Length: 267
Image 1 (cartoon, rainbow, N blue to C red):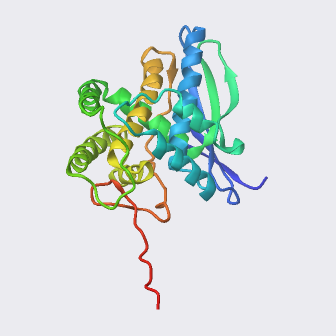
Image 2 (cartoon, one colour):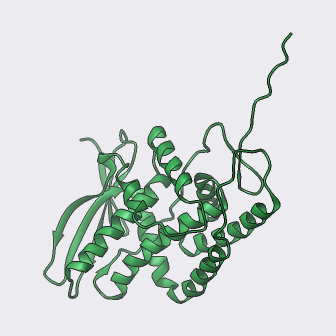
Image 3 (cartoon, one colour):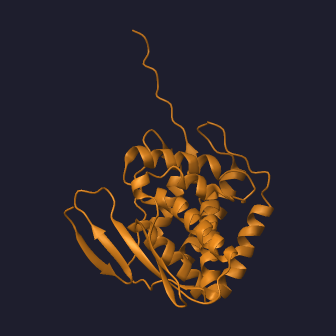
């Protein structure tokens, strides 16, 4: 196979010019006293995080469109519980780009090597390290998010129409502000945040999506805080790359706006 290996802050990257996605291998140092529940938490968090983040970097048009549609359908209503949805997305990822266990050795200390789409590995690592670095700040931030959705349990997905009612538009504006705040704390830049809003369909759904990503990063952060693993440091920025969906535009409020073609008058 023609290609080149290079190293990026603890992540070994295989670059193949003929491949649609860069594949990387992240080496996670492990230590301490593990039990079976810790292994289960690690496996669940990795698959959930990977499933949620992969749609943000998917290169195949058909796969990307299918995953984006699943996200839009999931993240509506006042309930922000999204348990197991990341794993559902994960099952829709092409086998060649799913997570692979490359090596696992443990004698305290040991190491775990996992291969997968480079962009996803970078984002998952960056999100987790951001949570670790600003743990105290996230306490108040999550409280603000919880209150936002607690006060809006009545929110429903808008029907197909060309206008948006004032109440939904106002909620959308507040969600966008929170979305930018949470995304920024998790390590996403402003452009990536806007693309997540576009992928999810509107700021309210995007906020739920970002919260779900943060929840999975929090599980990995807990394992590192407990001294069970150590993720590699990162200095490389990550970008969300997702073109706009055809036949659909996002209105000024961020709410999806369906447009209809005018019929030509019969001559």
